[in-house]
Image 1 (cartoon, one colour):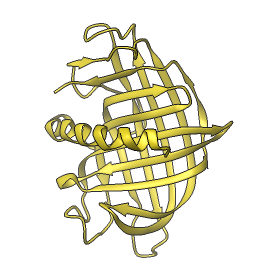
Image 2 (image 1 turned 90 degrees about the vertical axis):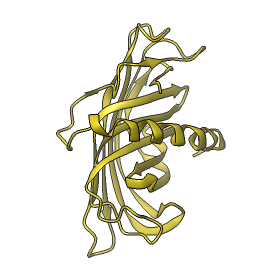
Image 3 (image 1 turned 45 degrees about the vertical axis):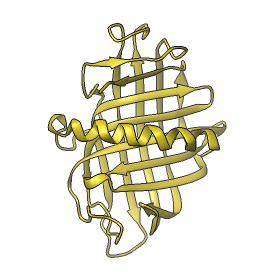
Length: 211
C-alpha cells in the first residue's frame, strides 16, 4: 500500500485489534456470505468523514511472501470478498450504522498446508476516501491459521479479526492488503500490488465502534 495507508495501519490495526479482543464473546462461528451488523451499538464518526459510503468488491490474486509478525510463511493465492457500508447521515453516534462482510480464502502453495479461511460475523470500523478503502475491519472466525515460529496461534480455528485495505490503481485493478488477527495478536499479512479487483464504491466516510 502507499505510505499514507501504511501509516494509518500502524495506529488503526492496534486499536481495532484491541476492540476485537473485547468483542470475542459476541463473535460466532463462520457462516455464509451475508451482511453482518456492527459488532456493538456504541459507534461514532469523526469531523470531515460524515455521510454514507458503500463499497462492494472481490478478487482473486497470486501473492508472494505472506508474513506472520514479520516472518515469511510462503506463497499462494488469495480470494477475497468484501462489503463495507455506512448507513444514514452519519454525523454522530446516533444517526448511522455499520453493515457488511469480509471473506478471505488463502490457498497455499505448500502441498501439506490446508486452506486458511476467514469469515466475518460483524463490523468493527470502516473508512473510505477518494480511490481508497482505507480500512474495513471485522470480527469473525478463522480456520487453519498457518504455522509460524513467530506465532502462538498455529492451527487456530476460532475467533479472529479480519482487515482489508484497497487502493485503486486503474479500472478493475487495486493494491490489496489483508490481515487476519488471530490468538494473542498474531497477525497474518498478505499484500499484492496491482491485483485484479472488481466492484464499486459510493461516498467517502468513517464510522467505527468505540471503546
